[in-house]
Image (cartoon, rainbow, N blue to C red):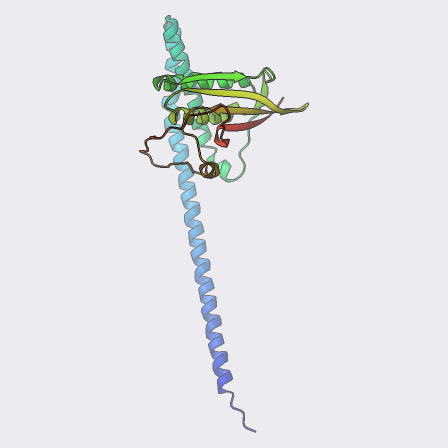
Length: 256
């Protein structure tokens, strides 16, 4: 008997070439991924080093500002000047805390960031925020006000620095996107039990507001409604007592 297997041999040869080619592709791809991983890790190490160096370089003059402000408060007797210096000192202390937290970025990326639990006054956070931002608001003809419910505890345990950062961002945006009227901070207890309270904090303004589509974007990383560095607000929409967008509200879950 005579059987022609040349076609089968041809197919087997092609399959063998395909397997060799596939292994080569897999090897090349693995090498490319390993190289990309090394590049990413190297870039991450460079970023961490840069942040550490920059934090140190910025922290040094900030400490000098805080120290000189403290000395000036001791030397100056005029109450108005002392009050302004006190505001400078509070703002500098907050900025120093933010600078220190820049070093927490690697911890955030590694899911190892810990939230502090120190005693603080919720009312004091609101007062300090308004004090730091009052000059900006006054320069634009805006009025800042606060309404803190009597149910809000005098002191709680939590991370006061990060809560202050949140509130400064909200009020700062309200000032930035408002042309007239008032900006109000409202704080009340939303929920509570024997061990903790959930504070509801609202920042209301008479600015341009956000559409539903814009609200859906604001909680995404590095996203904002208009990312142009030279944007100019040209439209104005009056605020009503019933308007409140999610971007201007925040819940703080804190321990007693």
